[in-house]
Image (tube, rainbow, N blue to C red; front, top):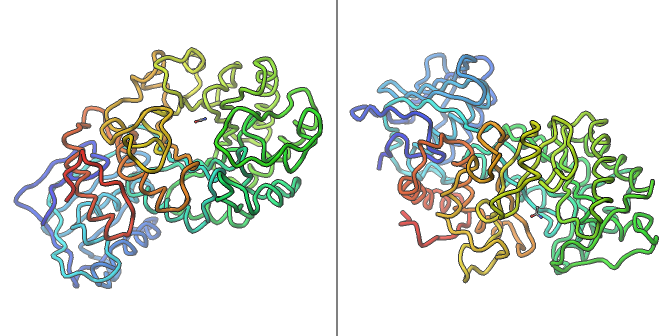
Length: 487
Ligand code: ACM
């Protein structure tokens, strides 16, 4: 069945259907890629070849045409379907990549199959003009409580980029494990990345520097920036197990595999602390081409308020020394932040003076309220996986909110964007991660991309139903939420 133009998630900014017009891809279809579009053309071919079974050779007058036009602006695109074919124009290569994602969703669901399907590959006619509402559209994966392999992280990336996500925040360290090799402090991973680490000891592993670089490169090819997080001054038990000199008394704590939070702290008054932090940040920054270094800062209940401020004030210049822009959970706003620092609001309260005060001083905010955007919250009381400390988060709850209304004092122009964290205390596999992310991640992704005026729950419900067959073809696990009339 031919889809309606605009039957896409995230819903595009402008859709002008031409109801009498359509175009059908067939074995004669070829592809024209203007200079600068070759890499995106490869993504297009990789998406279209398996299910169509067609070669889709390159030619000068292809029915599928890819080009760039900087006048459209960053990440923007135009997609025109006429009787002669499809023209995809990107404001830049990222925008063109998003045009490809939209075209994929406009083709029949069987396009997601891995083997040739006997289907008329018809696309509805008309013009889509689209651009993002926010520049930061993120997902976060907690690889500390449960480690996800490089292949699993790549698979998760493949499953989120269709929704025009452009940042992958990796929560690399926590009480239960340390997941990135640091040459100057090798016991971090030798001891706290190994067997028995993770919640219930069920998530061991760490990335070598080469493996982390592999994730960064794979993400970059999909226009995704990796944001590494080293969580401190709390959530550091794994570091202290490996290096007891990072504790107040120099005695190694026991490794922890339970769900408690708020019991560990780096020592604000010890010089070893800052030598450690400087080394770690320098090495992580050197591996990370993106502009951001996330320093955590959340749930530091084992740090006094005064020590917390001392610590953050000493660490922020260490981030600046790496040339990176600091990001922290919103508790970081307990100190006056440098102008380029970004806070990530995560709690469920309806007000937060720290985040609003920092926004008033010009610090941008990433909105990730746990009661809306945390993909690890249970959908409903009977959801087998997930937590419920922020309540249950149905698909409608994940969709029906707006980041510019979430906190008084934090409006549209204060927002860098929106992100959907996935904490992994209860997750044991990629399939577990998928079941929690899908279908709520598309809801948060639409909030991050689409104009507010274009969003509508009934429309979203209907468009979401069409993703079911696509996920089945791709072998992606998802929660068959009862709010949706699944196709
Ligand atoms: C958080 O959920 N502790 C950021």
